[in-house]
Image (cartoon, rainbow, N blue to C red; front, side, top):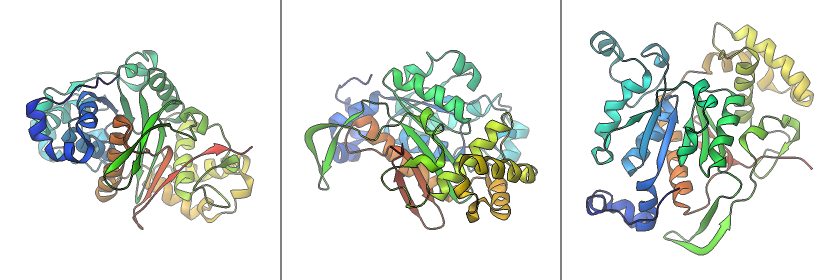
Length: 338
């Protein structure tokens, strides 16, 4: 999907440091790549910022109403909400960000807006198949699985990314045939082309009970707490017909998740994270974003997108979790127990 042509003169000057770091071939792939961003949450915007600065063209897909949809968004781009809401009328979140994205890297020209809802994208999967990468946020499990399948069938990559309070989690689908050259030392890569292992399609991850998930870097007795937190948030969204957990819905969230974990993974029902007080906190922070968490997670994920596009270095796979209070980031390779 990405042509292997060298960068033009202006790009060579602007991206000189990147070319020195990644090489001209990698920068050429980056410059030719196109990324579609679905629902521009704070962490999604941080990924966008890092990639646009690196020369990756962005298309924005977020028909949610502005400014109502971004009241809890930790945004690098958004104008002052109080003033902009009075002086400038935007029809959607995507339109509110378009000008700022274009100013960030004028070399990339006009920032495209895909004026479709998630449901419209699902009805026409030819839209996502046009992109080398799709980065989606704040969408449900089933929708994410369908969009990931449509994206990877055409050779693209799909990242589902979200942040909630001090934590962030991402579920990644790079397709079953992603190849890369492994890093050798600090400044070189192997000449041997490898195929990424431990691939599990995004839509399949949700179908595996938590007690049946295993893989490299999975905790000894259960999946990482942050992954289970994200899974609980998405489960409630699915059960409630598209509603996200919140402080007002905390009691309903507690009941729904305790009932779910009792059936899904009864061995985990006694864990502290599935007790009432912790679940209420999860509900309160489910859509609350913190700027430092978004910035760090967005930087990490932006780098992973670069690796996936350039095929230089082994990229993160399956799941990536970030714990803001400790600053630790873990790539969790998930698979069903045999």
